[in-house]
Amino acid sequence: MIVMADVTVTVGWYMILAAVLFSMGAAGVLLRRNALVMFMSVELMLNSVNLTFIAAGNELGLVEGQVAALFVMVVAAAEVTVGLAILVAVFRRRSTANVDLLSELKG
Amino acid sequence: MIEVFLFAIFALVALAGAVVMLTARNPVYSAMGLLVTMFAMALFYVMLDAHFVAAVQILVYAGAVMTLFLFVIMMIGVDKKEERVETIPFQRGITFVVALGLAVVIILAGRQAWVTGSDAFGSPDMVGTIETVADSLFGTWTIAFLSTVFLLTIAAVGTVALAMFGPTAVQSTDEEEGA
Image (cartoon, rainbow over all chains, first blue to last red; front, side, top):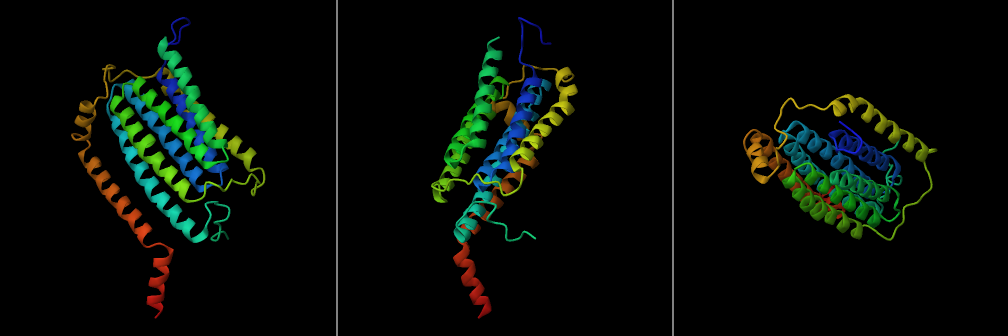
């Protein structure tokens, strides 16, 4: 499919880009201590999965990939509202969003 | 050919946005990096003929979700820089190795299916307009759509409850129970 002088963007390119972005989101969750930035990293992971859904749906000629991406968006929006509300409630009590300082349950 | 150039440019833009999100010490810069990545994603969706999802991506993610993030960042201390001291030994190195391994595993595991592809279902000229998406969403997937209505209602009620019954309100109810 990939021929010199006539290169086309295949579904594999999108999949590899989505895999790299997903790994960067996972690295953000592991690396950052600010709970807000950890939430953003989770959003990046969800977005990269959306990209795989839509690329695969385009490759197969199915609209279901886009429908799945829409459902992922809805779940991500619900998750982020509840998560940020919890974060604000934690911040009002503890005055920090650093997950290293929120370790009271640590054994 | 122009598709290849667009893909290359916006793949670099998306990756740069993700790198900024990962490395910026100020959470506002992290949010801006994620915003850049979201816009690049919307362009990829257009290139993949998912026009309606691209519009929703910009409206919901770049519009609503990132605005919510920025509100919360402004509320809970944009002035506090994140400390760079590693509390867990070798956290950065381990994170790099884990993330790299994850990317390699995903790419290796999916390589067969992606490179060979599949055109068994045919009709490569499917375009994700509002009509085609809505036909599927309100036809085959009506039950799933209705369950997202429940999910969003529960999320809205939960958010309001968390905001209303915060630390002070919880303490007052505790006192009433104790008295």
